[in-house]
Length: 84
Image (cartoon, rainbow, N blue to C red; front, side, top):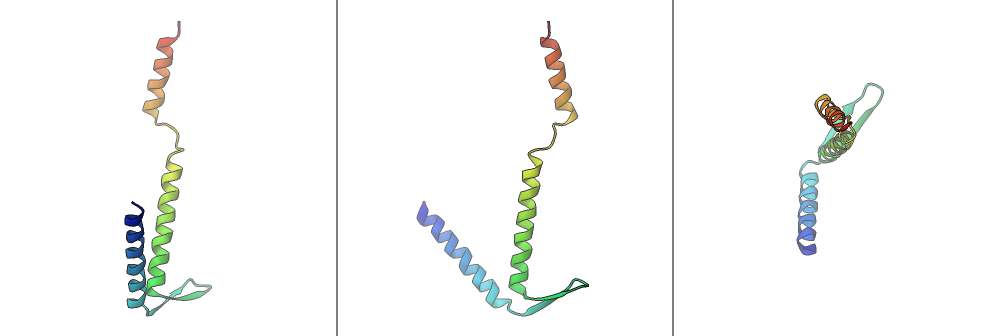
């Protein structure tokens, strides 16, 4: 199993290196107060990383959401039926 994981990681690293080498042109991002010049591959990797982090944060925060109204009302009616 470790060998399979190692091969998958090596394949993704090789694809990342190839993507970076094929997209070596610089892209200029102008934020109004500053401008940044990055290679296309680095910009794509940064966008992928930011999206992955925001998606993970959204999923993590979604676990702590309050229960919906339907679950609360059924829970309250269940407790009322158990009361003597």
